[in-house]
Length: 95
Image (cartoon, rainbow, N blue to C red; front, side, top):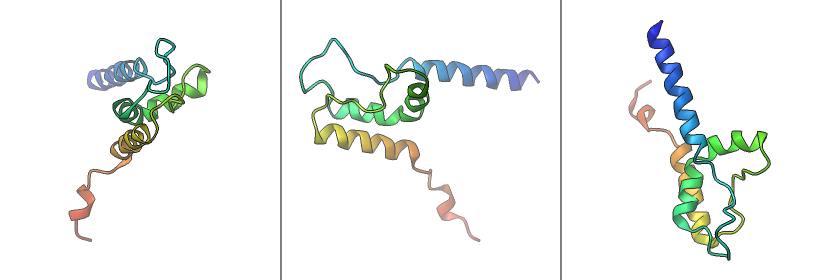
């Protein structure tokens, strides 16, 4: 029973930690080069958490509108692929 509580506490702590890194517009930066490849990669990685938060708040976005263009998009898609890709463990199993 204590082990179950430990896992629940770790899940809540992990969710709070990831929620604190949610993507959104940064009012301190101005201009079109506010988000580049690395920001796109990070926002692609945290998309599942950011999407859930964006359902309940209006100031969190899942995609940065002010970005550098193609490099941001590439990083974003790469981050999405890393999050939603499988481990490949099922590829080597026989049926």
